Length: 166
Image: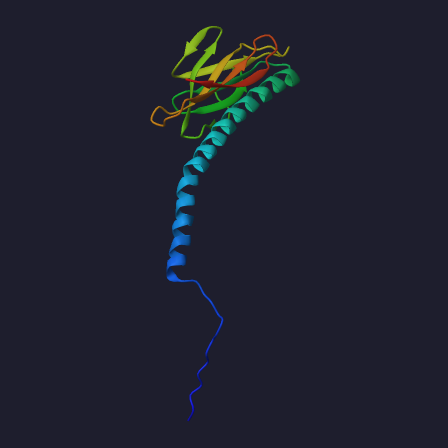
């Protein structure tokens, strides 16, 4: 019996050293880019939380004008909950929560500073409001210099987001 022996010529593959070097380069690139990607995702999430609250404030103003009634944007600083309700009602069934990594702080309304408990920003049928500033920050345990301040104009009732540094 003759054995079949196939001889491959002019075929080249990758050596083990070449494969290891490629894996090292891929690992190095992944290690360098991961912190950048994570910080970007945190920043985008922070902005989204601020935009969601600003949107709820705009909606409250719009509903107050449309329904011709006083509507309040209420929030609980400790729990991170916020909701819309008629000025005479205590709580709405549609309560929303901030992401657990963020908190509302330094809420001011008519120069009244509220750092804990509940607060309300009222919107009136003519489009005006009680005014104030709602600040969205990361919890103190997470290192971040960025905060977003949502200011509510008392005359027009409009809200505006500004990026702040601590």
